[in-house]
Amino acid sequence: MTDLQTRARPPGSASPFRAAPALLGYAAVRALGLLGLALWSAARDKSAYTLLTARWDAIWYSRVAGRGYGYEIRLPNGDVHADLAFFPLLPWLERLLHAVTPVSYADAGFVVALLASLAAAWGIFAVADHVYGPRAGVCAVLVWAVLPVGIVQSMAYSESLFTALAAWSLYAVLTGRWVTAGALASLSGLTRPVGLAVVAAVWAACAASLLRDRAVGRESSIAGTRSTAPASGAPAPVHAPGPSAEAPAGREATASTPRCAPRALAMLLAPLGAAGYVLWVGHRTGRGPLGYLDVQAGWRNGFDGGLAFARFIAGKFTSVPGALAGLGLIAGVVLLLWLFAVCVRQGQPLPLLVYGGTVLALALCASSYFGSKPRLLLPAFPLLLPLALALSRLRTGRAALVVGCVATASAVYGAWWLNGSGPP
Image 1 (tube, rainbow, N blue to C red):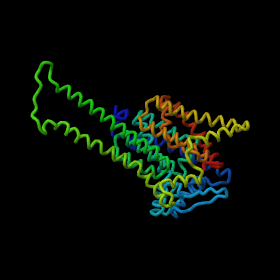
Image 2 (image 1 turned 120 degrees about the horizontal axis):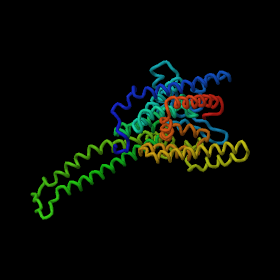
Image 3 (image 1 turned 180 degrees about the vertical axis):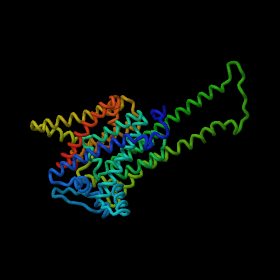
Image 4 (image 1 turned 60 degrees about the vertical axis):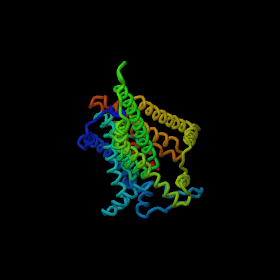
């Protein structure tokens, strides 16, 4: 057992060859989803590619990539939709790809999303494989791929990019690569506001590891004192005063300092991305450190502990169809909370629990557009690990049948969803 209560895995456990079955399965599920979208859109005389690259948030990201920040829309009700609400890493990558290739900003966003989704699938496999083994790792990737809103993973949105950075940061934590974990957490903070969940996971893991090392050092010191204590009735050894008497303690302190430095550096790096962008927005708007909250308020986004979401659900119970939708929403929330409880009961490593719990809390307790909540939960892949474990216990043929049926249903739902109202 490591200091984060995970099974030790071979050094090459994150190799692409080990992850190949998971990546091939993921690519097959996503290809099915894109095929379903293309067929559905063609039947409705719509462009599937436009739905993926040039609607909703994708337009805002490509606009930032091409023209920089500074664009806003003032609505008749007084709301102000400013592009400062969108974090910069995805537009930066779109601009970079546009600069080195002939593709447009929208095309660049689609390419980044496709590559990032594969990186996210690989990272999810690496985490699940490290904790539960390769079969569970493959199943975790497939469960993430067949989510009802999985089509978002192929859109020019930031969800896939963020999930990739989060998954690999968590894997770095689990394998003791502290500086890498902090750097990736910082990049995730430049991608979406929920990057705070990755920061919290890195901080919690570092703090727990430092406390555990201190406890182990204290126990070792006590054990060492006991081993050098004189036997009963024997004369106590006499030490000459001077530096030599303090040498063991000095050597212990010197040895512990390098071990603490990477974790301290990780804790320092992790919040830099999110903090840097938020402070820059505050400076640009002239509203100080809380300026980003004002920008989000213009979009009617905020954190109210879930009161607005509760009122939204309660408002559904005014008609029979609405009541059915309300019951479905309640069932969905209960399912999410139950999955998190199972994660705790199964003893998931601390960073996964902190990350998954924080993403869940931010998604459910935010007052943002309620139709976007399933999309906001997409990066919370640790909540899917209990389902992946259950799937991994099935025989291969039966597991393939289950995944195939759910993938088909997900493809149909994703095609219907994008050709309808969502995602915003």
